[in-house]
Amino acid sequence: MKFAIIQFGGSNCDYDVHYVLNNVVGVQADLIWYKEKLTNYDGVIIPGGFSYGDYLRAGAIAARTPIMQEVKQMAAQGKLVLGICNGFQVLTESKLLEGALMLNRYPKFVCTQTQLRIENNNTPFTSKFKEGELIKIPIAHIQGNYYADESTLTRLEYNLQAALRYVDQKGKTTDTANPNGSKENIAGILNQNKNVLGLMPHPERASEQILGSSDGIKIFKSMVEHVQAQAE
Image (cartoon, rainbow, N blue to C red):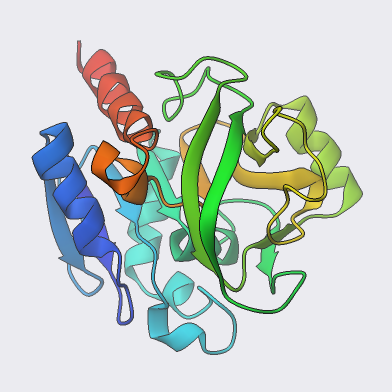
């Protein structure tokens, strides 16, 4: 089993994800420069950062690099694709996920701990959680305001594609708990087949208790468990 972590010019969370997968989870993960090929990988992770300086739109240039065609092929084959923060932006720009990430409601960079609620634990990324579980994972972005039109939001809700939501200490989706103005407090969404996930919070920054939370490790462990199950 091995995962690819794609590096673009401006990626800055690539080594964090690499460390967590290799040293905390204990699976092989390789750093793959965007000009290289994705060969014999069970899944791919697009990490956070500011690919190409967020010129044009966040994730827009990275989404149009040739390696993203390979990512699309992997997704079509049912392999796992995880986009974190800038990776989420890349996935929406490449149309692997619906909607868009806009400037935060208050258009400033936000770096803070957030409380999230697991909306659907019947996915390859969330199987280690309980449905409705409250977890803590930090965010760090200026364009994390998830937007989709009403018909898309209705479809996402119907298909259980909203994976995580920002909530308060009681688990309620309040406006105060929403750090960026995202529609319906959405922090992460899935594609219809549930093998592609994009989320703004950084699970790699919440994978060891010394960081203040180890809740994020369950996302990576869920992915590993899924790949193992598929191989049996």
